[in-house]
Image (cartoon, rainbow over all chains, first blue to last red; front, side):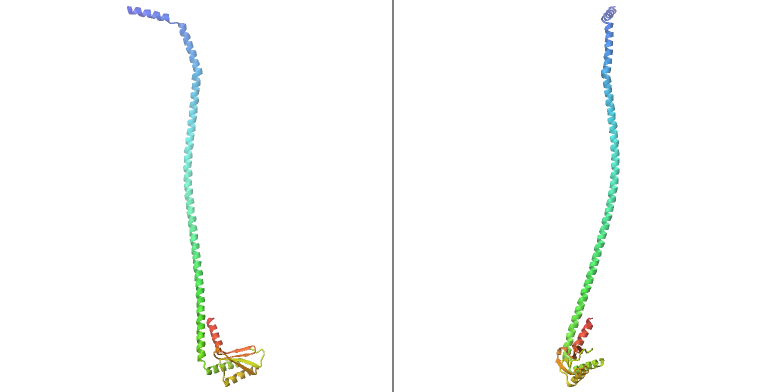
Length: 176
Length: 76
C-alpha cells in the first residue's frame, strides 16, 4: 500500500515536472542542430574524406602504374642487359678473331721477312763465297804463274830459246 | 798483223842474246817485212821467245805473254 502510494506520488511529480513544449522545442533545436551539423560539418568532412580516398586511390593507381612501369623497365633492362651481353660476346668474339687474324698476319709477315732475309743473306754469302773463290783462284793462278816464271827462267836453256824463236818466226812467216 | 808502215829498223826483244843462226833467221824475217836492220834489246823478264816491233805491228812470241794468256784463260 505504502509502495503504491509512493509510486503514484512520483508519477504525479514527474508529470508535473515534464513540459511538452520544452521537449518539442528541444527536439526541433536538436533537429536543426543535426541538420546544421550535417550540412556544415558532416558533408564537408564526407567530401573531404571522399576526396582523400580518391586522392589515395589516384596515388595507389599511380603507384601501381609506377610499379608496372618499374617492372616493365626492369624486364626491359634485363632484356637490354641480356642483348648487351650477347652483343658484347659477339664483339669480343669478333675482336678475338680480328686479333688472331692480325697476329697470324704479323707472324706470316715476320716469317716472310725472315725468309727474305735468310735468302738475301744466303745470296750475299754465295756472292761473297764466289768472290772469295775467284780471288783465291786468281791468287793461286798468280802464284802458279809466278812459280812457273821462276821455274821457266831457270829451266829455259839457250837451245830451248832458240827453238822457241825459230818456231815463232816460222809461224809468223806462214801466217803472212 | 798488218804493217802500216815499214821503218828501216826493227826492234827485237829477246831474253838472251841470240846466236848467229837465230840472228840470221830474224833478219830474214824482218827483211821479208820491209825492214833493213834490227836493234836488239835484252829483257830477261820475257823469260824466253821473241818480241818484234815493226812500226805499229808487234809480233809477240814471248814466254811471258804465253803465260799471261794461260792465266787469262784459267781465270775466265
